[in-house]
Length: 248
Image (tube, rainbow, N blue to C red; front, top):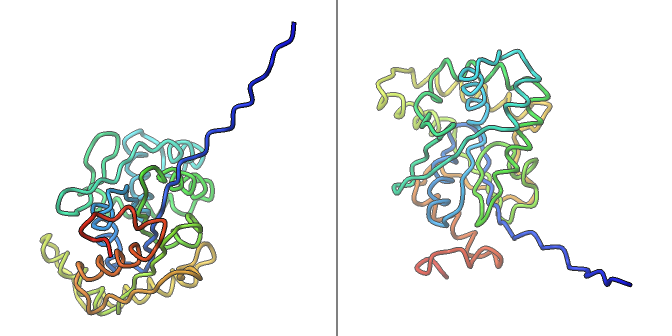
C-alpha cells in the first residue's frame, strides 16, 4: 500500500507595512505618529517609552533593576499596548492598566535609565519592538526605528526642529501640567542630549539613508501629519491604506 504525500505550499506571511518616524527629543514625532496611525487605522509604537514601561513592570513584579536576567525575561513578555483615542492622543496600557501618567514621572525616568544600560535588556526590547509589527500596519516612532529596528520600512521620516522650538514645546507641556521649568535650561538640556544621542556608540541618532527629513520648526502638528500622509500617498504599496478622502 502506498500513500501520496500532499505537498501544500507554506502559507505566505501577510504583508505588514511600517512607517517610521525618527528624530531627536521633543521633535513632535510621537504626536505625529499617533495621529497618522489613527488616520490609517494602524498600530502605533512609542519605542522611547519602552524602557520606562519595563522599569514600571519590574517594580510591579518586584524585580530588581539590577537583575539583568529577570529583566530580560520580563522585557520579552511585556504585556503593553500603545493605543490612540479619537483625538489622536496616545495611551499606554500595561497589563490592562493605563499607565500613561506615571510613565512621565521623574522617578520612572530614573528607573528607566538604570535598565537601559543592560545589554541583554536592550536585545530583548529590540525583539519586543519588532513584535509590534502586526496587521494592518505599524507607525513606529523613536530614534533608530528606520535604521535598526525596521530597516525595510516603506516610509521613513526623520523629524526635527530647532532646539529653541523643541524646548518651547516642552516648556508649554510642563507649564500646562503644573510644573515650572526654565526655558533657557531646557534649551541647553536639549542641545546636550542631542550631542549624546548623535555620538553614542550603539544606534546613534541619525536619519536612515532613504529617510525623508522633515523640519517642523515652523509647522503646526496638522501640517506635519499632512506631510507624512503625502509621503504615504506617493507610495504604491501604502496608498491603498489611505481613507478615500485622502486619496490623491
